[in-house]
Length: 377
Ligand code: ADP
Image (cartoon, rainbow, N blue to C red):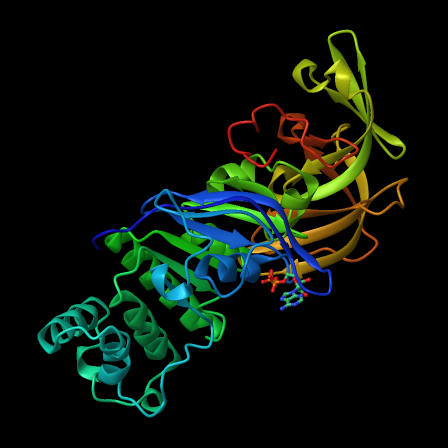
């Protein structure tokens, strides 16, 4: 598609009348042709951010940019961004063709140009056979494609998508998600895509931006976000089940150190026993980095099974570490296949200390190497 553009938010504050502050000094950019997926819990400010860029609401402070041009003062119709919402808001009394033509008629384009654009979008989205149907004669997935088509024919500088798949049932959602991903890729479309579904964000996003309480927590490519979460919020949000987070005490001694979890201890290799980390920290460990230790082994953490989830291809084992009753003392372990346990069984869990993440009192990751992925500080 011609003329896609970069978009940027610069130090945006949004305070609603009544005093709710929805965004705090939020900076974020989407490069030309990039898809940034914006994810976070309900109420974290995702929709507000989109609405500000679309011009449906005004920022209290900060700059909004499209292709290097400050657009704060531009009315919505001059911003040239197309929004796709969850309720596709197709016109029920118009056919698919009518819905696709509508934005072009509003712009008073010549008939031949309208026909050309509609044919292009219909071809791209395989809507050709549906052009004479009304929205109520379409499936949810087809309606979603028409809504996309209506956004496409406007040839926008960028797409803003607000949970566009959330009205679809889960099977269809996964199918449309891959079609949409392929389409946006092919178009080289600059897209800011809002979702509360982390798996959608991780599969669609070139980069994923995680927000909480009006603040950007981290923006990074999906793999970096998973492997190097910048703080405990991101660690506990990304991943299903998310990273185990639990209180530990680290002491360094000689060329190594020790990790204390409740009344249990385990040795830490030198690179993990940084003297600066001595003291009370939060440790993080992905469920796939915990394993069952051999029954005769001396290493491993003693734990008592509290619950199991049998998912067929894997078993999630929930076990509480002995001598700990603080929140975070229950660890989830991802085991291959079906493995049978009963509540109260004792198990030994082993782990590679190099897979541990450490977070300080403010929740920020102490691992080195986050600087390249976190542009939020
Ligand atoms: P999300 O899209 O992540 O669910 P929103 O952007 O809708 O979050 O909302 C962010 C915060 O701003 C919430 O606390 C919400 O209640 C508040 N908010 C949203 N719209 C308005 C409004 N028009 N007036 C007052 N507060 C609002």
